[in-house]
Image 1 (cartoon, rainbow, N blue to C red):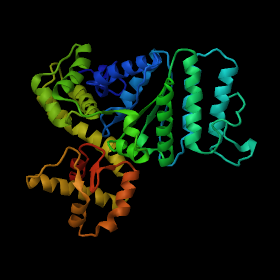
Image 2 (cartoon, one colour; image 1 turned 60 degrees about the vertical axis):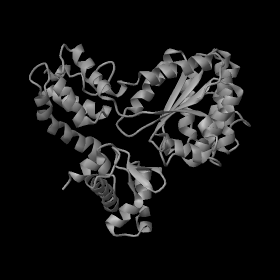
Image 3 (tube, one colour; image 1 turned 180 degrees about the vertical axis):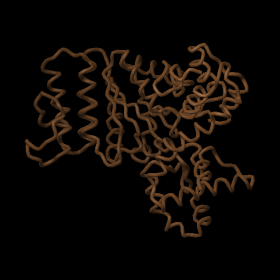
Image 4 (cartoon, rainbow, N blue to C red; image 1 turned 90 degrees about the vertical axis):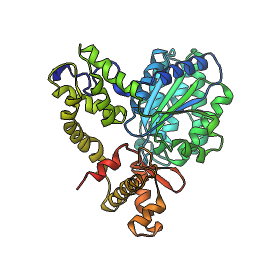
Length: 402
């Protein structure tokens, strides 16, 4: 097959595998936008799932939907060491510009509030040393600048929402890796979303994060489950995975044989990132259409090597030797449970007590490695006393290392 025409290369095609099977989320979001724009009550949205299921791609697609609806939008990626003021201010600045509100006193006022909110990130700094968010309007005193992030975000969202309501539009802020927000920032977002729901202002937050994100939100505010519509983004079914492979091939006048589709699902587990990685290598090495199971077998080592370096290896390298021992123990305990006839989910969820027994260590001595891996986003705790990999097939990768 012609590598130049490879429809599975990153960025190729109109609908990559990460968006296959996501029509329900896209349609639901369209309804959310329409309801809010008509002044109807509606909740913000949260997307959760493992690495490699296409959360970020879907988040970008939802933002594109909002842009087509002529909403103001902004997006940023949360980081554990970063506070929310600067990235949120930058995202809202973009959103206000996209609204297309006629320039004037009200727009300048809202921009000034955004600027005041951002500059409170450096309390006590001299004027010349303050971070400038690129807003020409002067900062507004006495609005979103109290220093209390919860109070300030509520005031900020209220003013932005009022501006959007004036032009009959809405504002959507998209936050990726939302589980990495600092605790006080999570609390502030919950409080602001609660206020928005009470006042029916057209502003929503759309977040994406790892499977434990709902627990993070719930731990911050007990009423968080009433504020967000949760959407679990999982691997694709066999039918959806087949469509993710067949549709791009048909655009290039090629096709997959039924046995090749079965072989691809067995190799990828239906995870969109893996489908794209394997699809790219199979396309490059397959001599002709239709693509066969033998083509999948020949190309699999190339795909696995690419994943080992770019997907698994890049994450493994971030771990210290002690953390790597912990990760490998997770994989070994999960494998032993499978060999013993026990049930282990796809990502290798195991009990922390079993890990301590396996390593011959006291549970308390493993806490530093566990906490560090949680912060690095390599594992997560879906329930008390159990942990799992955030990356599907990571245990299999670890067991395959020397």
